[in-house]
Image (cartoon, rainbow, N blue to C red; front, side, top):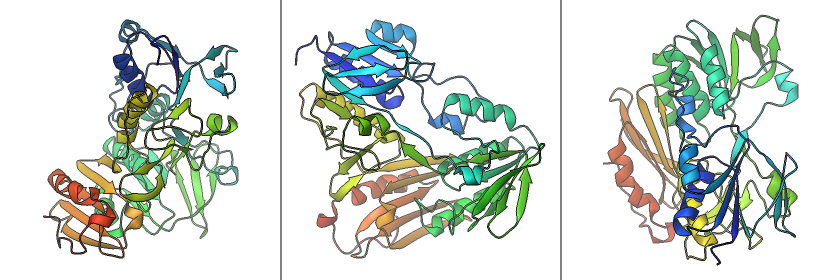
Length: 399
């Protein structure tokens, strides 16, 4: 491609910034535009539910204005792209500006899944996704405040851990049979639940929220069973939704994410996508997956940048995610939804646990490690072997 081509990136989170820096590294003279709808520099999100809530509000920006200027990346800060025009290769912005492109990359990320209005009931509900959300919540979770957290997934549990460490009283309501139901087996969930309960939190499972309540001073939830619980703050951590609206309106193929191939190409040859908004193939496994993880947002955009410049590159990495709660580290590798049996080593008394998830044929399809990074390293190679190449016989422990 010509070095003078115009490259436009929509979305200035980790994925957008990674792509912009990789493009600049590979093509020093191209015109690069990076659009971000937040009024600040690109930043890392994992600290929001951890150190920011604990009181350290020093932004972990990924870059600064001087570095962007030195790299000659035109950063459109706080300017949302509202429409894509694939036929004339341009994007339309909220301020009325229209910017043409030769190649377009979508790194639009995700947003919190909000409670239905019938459940939220016009009660103030806190969600955590952006730095401004974390700062507001940090200022609210002072000592002795009572928090209700709806959802026992990563975000809900990380918020619960930070708030408990700030001296708050916590009640977690999870609709499933156990916490971490989307990503971990009951044995792993039991370990993590023990950690939270040992710090004074209450966890209620199979708890369906009928509606949220407010008496003008406090807020609360009414469960389907009729029980009512009151608190000072309600935080909802009920998952995220990929931001596919721009892509879908432009006619790109979307299916729980923007559908891309292993090289990050969308259904239009001049438009690419990367990060947790994508639904993409993974080596050795059938079908497409949308992977909600920092690793996807960090690594897939580099492949997108390389492909945009005519290089041969593929992103088909095994899903990997982690969560820090109190002094406990949980790592998850592979595809927990494919596992029907688990083999475990360790328990909460030993303060460590690892587990292998096996499918119906006895193949290792997932691995978990709590406070045991060495185990996840050992298991990574086994889980990464394509199912068709694995031996039926698998190790009996994580050792």
